[in-house]
Amino acid sequence: MEKRILIIGASGQIGNELTMSLRNRYGNQNVIASDLREANALVMESGPFEILDAMDGKATEKAVKKYNIADVYLMAAMLSATAEKFPAKGWDLNMSSLFNVLNLAKDKKIERIFWPSSIAVFGPTTPKTNTPQHTIMEPTTVYGISKQTGERWCEYYHKRYGVDVRSIRYPGLISYKTPPGGGTTDYAIEIFHEALKENKYTCFLSAQTALPMMFMDDAIDATVNIMLAPSQKIKIRNAYNLAALSFTPQELAVSIQKHIPDFTIAYQPDFRQVIADSWPASIDDSQARKDWGWEHRIDLDTLTKIMIENLSK
Ligand code: SER
Image (cartoon, rainbow, N blue to C red; front, top):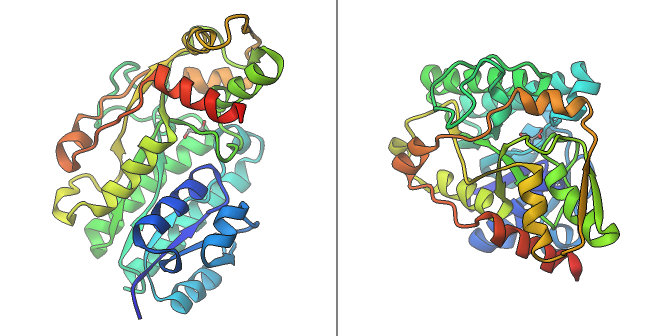
């Protein structure tokens, strides 16, 4: 039987698009999507799907055996804003799901793992612009603490047990296909929906809050490419810095006004402002570019154009 891929968290913002991209590349039957809840029709109808709780180690192992899985992409997670509301649950989900797959790899039941980290691993004491790969990391959110801890465990499992785990610190990801859930960077998606519906948007971050961002297609390319790279090229086994764009809500509003001239934005920062303020404004990702050839393609105005064209349909 052929070696196959399992995506855990396939109904989420990244999981959904990642599933379709991997199915295109490796064949529909070789990419098994799984989640607690059913995914969209495209994912459900194009290939195998399993209801799977990422926290259930036994069920995960069962799915791995059933489909002869080699690679696991663990995309299930509770994001920053939601995890501040449910700290214990966020920690449990983010850590136990990771240990489940790390242990499967340690026991040689799977060959490789992709696990996403985030800019949330950084904190208020981290250098804010062009944040280096190796720097001070004192995250102040539950989500950030879980990602930072997860990174340490990934590196540990690689060094101690030879586990082939690969990871990226995703910036805020912007897409039109699947709604995001519970992130601090989600304003950059909501704004497009509201601009098209209401011509106006009230932003939960302040005008000048610069954050690292990326269009989803670039993030999917990065994910597929880091997994395609020969193992010896992956020098960082906690997680790579990854960057494309850095912009503020005001700059995004100006880009939207090029398409919708009477669009207006107002600012009403809430608890998410504190989270955003603790994160970098921009990221130095030169190591990813050097080690495995990372390149982004989509700039801010292209992103705006793609979002508006597709959401208008
Ligand atoms: N986009 C995520 C969030 O805002 C960051 O990884 O929580």
